[in-house]
Image 1 (tube, rainbow, N blue to C red):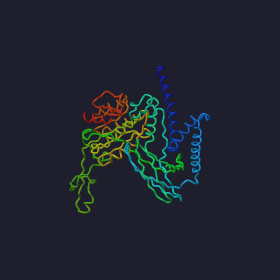
Image 2 (image 1 turned 45 degrees about the vertical axis):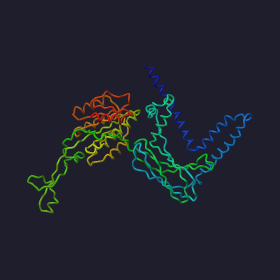
Image 3 (image 1 turned 90 degrees about the vertical axis):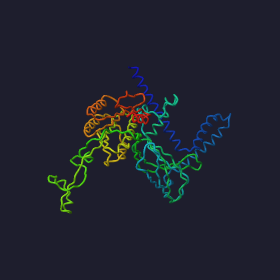
Image 4 (image 1 turned 180 degrees about the horizontal axis):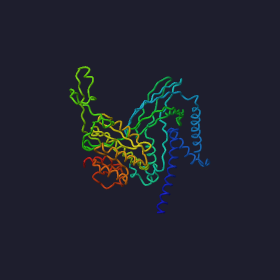
Length: 465
């Protein structure tokens, strides 16, 4: 036991040391790539080579090339430093036209409007977003797995560089290419189209635009950063459910119809008008007909039969399993977008901030699937909140006639909730999103969705039902 704990402590310290080193490498690599052009990086590399091979000036004349390259490099940096003074920087007004929504993995675009308010013409420059560097802890670095990481060689897997770069981009949330502009004359208005691909759900905050102006030698760039605050809500990726995949239980009588399903009171669904009969309730009289026709008419109502299902998303997940949770959200989004879901009432149950159970009702003209996707886009992990979720589910149990429970953990509290729902005779489907080596034994109501094979597992599940 002591040997095992010692190994775990050593592995944790090694991962922390490795993560710190990767952070430093990434930081300085980004600094050089942002400040120097491709030619500038080539000159810097040549400087280092000539410094090594021309150290002995008696045996070689390479030191002369070193002096020339060093002079060019220093001149470029001096020009950049001189142009960095605020008094001689160009005056620009920038504005973005960003979309309200985007979807994970789906390429999109927005436009940037530029107005040169200065009196000088701007030559060729590069326009890019300056994104805030994401924070990454050791737990995330250890638990994360780059897609197809198992195909890399032993060295790449153990140093974790490619995993680090992938996780850094994922946490940043968006991949944006820099755009080149041919120039902008004085008082001229320009439009730049920026292509981007969202990498994760949630809000993407854009705060600063950076313009890079090359100095005359083309070795280094001068920066101009302008604050322009915008944000984009990225909706989760949705796994596709087969069209013939029917779920949610059988239709049953819903007293009060759709209106009663979402409100408290005695409201019912309006059916038609008919003439007044003795004994009819006065509150059902259509008073407009009495004033117009001098004959009382009453409104009649009917109750409805329809399916009402609960989509339960367990967001009490350990932080190191956040990738499993992201896949669970995508599975829930697939159910929200399914064609069958539009014909029923769908209750989304999860836990929000402060471990307060949240409930959202969609379907049958109450709310559409896009509103549920907006909610799923901002669902976060809430550790220690499963008891609140279980209580909310049991409170809603009498109103539902079908249940889909999406989990990433299969322990005693989750099993107890499943047994309680089964005791209430509610049709139940449990979907467990798990790593490929953690698959639980198959049961008629328990289905494993393996990380990396979720779409295939959903297709097999539909074929088996």
